[in-house]
Length: 82
Image (cartoon, rainbow, N blue to C red; front, top):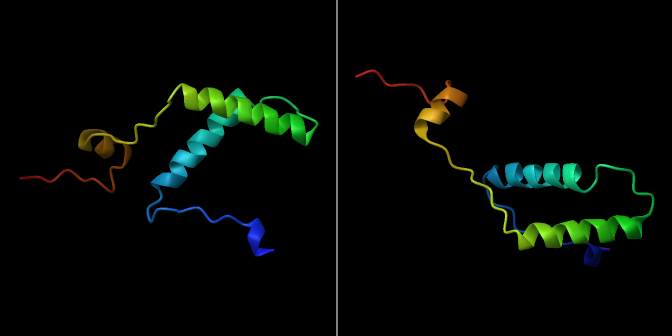
């Protein structure tokens, strides 16, 4: 049974999960927006979408400025008064 499982490397921080969730969201909107009745058809559809997505070299820009962080996460990035 152990041969069936593949354990990928997972970074210590949660950013990878945000990226995975974003990619799954794009997959569901672009590829899985309809009922697909057979597993074989589903696999072919996902593989075709994946090839197209990889060929387009889409990236995720996960960086933002301190000013943007203060707007989004006021509690975590307080303004220090001098």
